[in-house]
Length: 295
Image 1: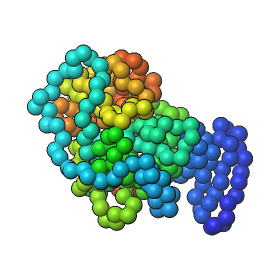
Image 2 (image 1 turned 90 degrees about the vertical axis):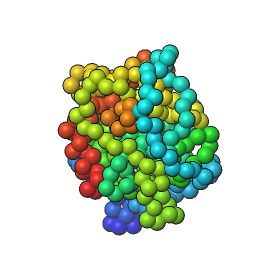
Image 3 (image 1 turned 60 degrees about the vertical axis):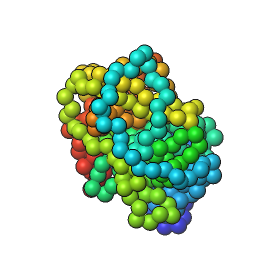
Image 4 (image 1 turned 135 degrees about the vertical axis):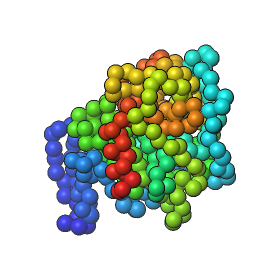
């Protein structure tokens, strides 16, 4: 039924489903969402949807002017004093996630970071930022975002991968998503070549010196905080820092040397007033990363 829309009403918390050009969409918490391959936990996005999202995001942003630079090398790492998040300089490989056109959503609602991959096109965030009874379709990643500027452009998904256990029951031990991206109007450009990327480590030994970075919903600059990351059971990582608000979800947890070992999310939706969590990057997240890289 390519090219036709078929509307089917359902009762399990989603108002209706629509099939357009062979792709199933639904109305859920994020507005219009894509059903994707729920059993596998993946969604492949067509160019038209991404192009429209990028164009809408750029209406409120100033694009260009960014210069790639090395991420902090950890030589000056120290625990934040006081132990609370504060404004930090924007970094090329860390950015904000936007969903333009959603009247009930903040202009940017989550955070993400560029993770090294063979394709050079991979972003990591929290699964709850991209999937809630369906995949967000109006999603844009703006690396290095600050004060209304998109210094490294606007990037949109070509594919989103989450763990099927997140799809089934929003299991906080699998609150991780990988997004392969492209930059509309810049065919062949690779995100990692523009911004650099964080290497990723699975099975990180804890405790470990670490820092987190993320964009609050109502802020134009990122916040950061450094402390020792510790284990919270066998499936969660914990980093105690006060005042890490909504919007920072999906932001990276990095070692002192800049290696990715988690993303803000997991238990309690990412934490509370004094504690942030991440799903532990063990074998399950490794398998998800490898699937995302393979495509």
